[in-house]
Length: 158
Image (cartoon, rainbow, N blue to C red):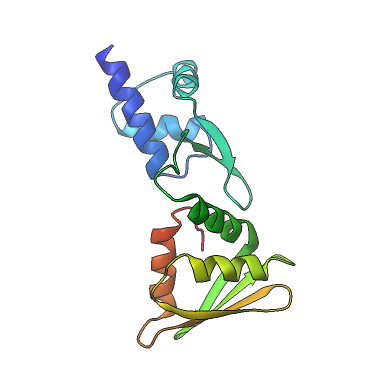
């Protein structure tokens, strides 16, 4: 029983720490942690923990624990979801950042950036359809912006 509880805690920690897309990937992480389990056992563990799969906002699905976002206000989760659903790529030159979005998503993506409380951002301009321009504060680079975004949105892929 003790091993099972430790394994369940490890599964929770791994799902919170990594982008886990499959049971095979999770099994590999568990093995690195010293847990040797079968796929059937892992499947039962996932069911017991009520683990589900959610869209990663791009091209696939990742495991998620119930209540994963409970520590974030609802509005912040909404802005993060809108950003992940709408952006395609982020590029920068110095303190200027351009975010390419899917058609019609420039407004929600700009609104998300404006409302995520990023002190590095002076403001955004949403293009008519699929581009957002982000102006950063003096001394803040595009790379600094990306690092801050990744802290705020761990699921963000650049």
